[in-house]
Each structure stands twice: as C-alpha cells, then as structure tokens.
Image (cartoon, rainbow, N blue to C red; front, top):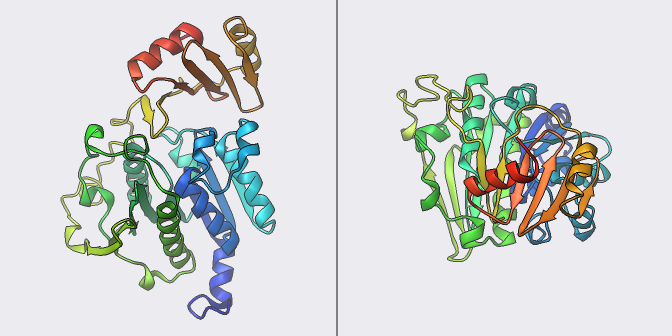
Length: 331
C-alpha cells in the first residue's frame, strides 16, 4: 500500500481480483506464487500434468516430497500456495485446457496468465480472451531466452496479429532440445506478474504495450513496439473468427515439452481409477492416489487421470502413444 501507484485502493482492487494461471509448471508456479503473495483474491491454477524430479530446477513451488507423492502439479502447488496467504482463495484444477472447458475455467476471471508450454493452448487462450474481452499475458521461455506480451482486447495487438498461425513444431526449440535455465523462468514470470498487478489494480495506462524479449546469456533485453501490427484483418481481433475456441483447430495428442512423453486427450468421460488399477495390476506395478494412476510396463510409464486423460512416457511419437494406450488401457 505504500507503493504510490497502488495505494490502499489498488490493494483492495487486487483482493477483489480473480486470475486464471494456465499451467503450473515453470512460469505458472512463479507467477502464481507472486500473485498469491501480492494478495490477489482468487488464483485459479489449472494444470494437466504431474511432477517429476527434473522439473524442480525451474518449478519453484515444489520439492522432492511433492515428486515422491506423485501429485498433480495443480494440487501440490495449491497446497503450498494456501500456506503462503490464507486470506485469499487458491483453487486447483487438474485438467487439460481445451475448447470444451475454457469457458468454465476462465469465464469468471478478470485476467489470464499464460504458464503453458505449447502454442496450441496459447492460441486457444487468445481466441477466448479476444472473444470475451478478457486481458491475458503471453509468456514463454526456452534456453536462456524469454518473451512477454500483455494483450488488452480492443486496445493492443493480439497473438494472432503478431503470428497468424502457430509456428511449425519442428522448427521451434523446446525444453527437450534446448533445455531451460531457472533464472530466465523467474525473470519472465516476474514481468508477467508485474503486468498482472497493473491490470488488476486498474493501472491500465502503465501496462507495457510492447513485446519484451530477454536473453540472459547474451545480456540482452529488447522492447519491440507492436502496436503497428494490430490489424483489422487479424483472424481473431479483426474478423472475430475463433477456430481454436470453437474446436475447428487443435490436436487430440500433444507431445510434452522436455518429457519424451505424449498426452492423449480424454473422451470426455470420467473413469474409475480403482477399477483400472485392478486391471493393470496384472501387467505391472500400479501406484494409485485420488488424482491419478501410474503403471510402468515395458519401456513405458503410463499415467491415467480421473478425467480420462493419459500421459504415455517413453515415447514422443503420438502414434506409438496411442498404440500403447489401446494395448493397456483400452479404447
């Protein structure tokens, strides 16, 4: 409250604020931590994945005990966040963000913070944000480089203005191919969180309307004006065409960044994890908790969530992952 641009009224606005942090991995765990500590009233954390030991160098909410407990990131993260600030609401959601559930996840928030690791979800977030007039903050990092762009619908260039379509996956470095260092994650998430505080506190004039690029290894920070790129012919904010939101675009199988694993989308029906555990106990050792089931068989590590999603570790090939799923889990 002593920071003049916020003051008591700004702090009250933060307490009334509602934010969706989409992804609770690297960027999302840092951003959620900062927003909870700042006193944002509701922080909804959604993530589709579970923890692994090689996450820990960049995912600051978690520790080795969380990995050993085999908890979903959203659940483990929310438990930690609730101990940081008990005066606000932290709401975990274990789910894959998709066209089918984005309205339920983001329909009642004031802001969306991007903590994802793939462009398909980012274009979905952009479609939803533009269609509803909800601000969102793009962020991404790999290696020692990162980018941040706040999007204010109707005022600034959106993601589709800058890049009409997702870049080909084979041309983009990933955590698997290029690695990522923890400091760049913290820098990019801090920039996202600062923009979030401006938006939530009503200080829209202070929002950075430029694309910020950071390279910590070569000691470069660049700020690029993108207002000229705002285009009335833009598919999203110009023509109001939202193919990611209405389900015309998007994949059912997604290779996970830095994981040698593939996520297979749910059919939409919840499943009985205990019943599946009995079935799979005949082929391998099964670990089961309230949120997921895990079995290791052959070279694969198969993780099935209660919502029916499956992550097949041990391959980055969607076709191979589908075959493994059909062989052990079923149709």
